[in-house]
Image (tube, rainbow, N blue to C red):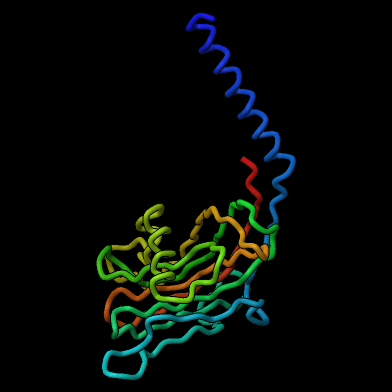
Length: 217
């Protein structure tokens, strides 16, 4: 077989594989969609925190609560507050989803995010991810953020898009993650804030949409 025929055969094989993969995705992916507006309760999301201790003892002032200050989906959102005087606080909400064990999934997470953090310095960071295990240590939650930041850069910060004090801007965030479900068929979705500057800040999350789809190729 000459070189041109080899290339032709290889091209045909690759084309067939991609076509088969696409057909499998269309037939078996079956994405499942979830929506959360927090209107009546926490909708099974749990509050979590890390790095909230002060060097001299005690803890930073922080809270995660349902609030009607700012909302886009109904009248209620989740309010994240931190007086981050230890320059390290991390607070987030977390929910687990049941899927098929030990399978590769694509998880799309979108939500409305209200921030008044203007300019491109002294910003807090957004924590968002889909993981096979629930983060238990500051190092684990930090790693989740950096996976997000390495892919999305400024979108993974609390920057509201303004260069002066505009007040709160409501931003629509869209992130995508790949994760292999754990042996119990669980995927954990994490959303929150990492304080990276010694000041107090308040942010809001509302209208959370999650789509989970099995990846076959």
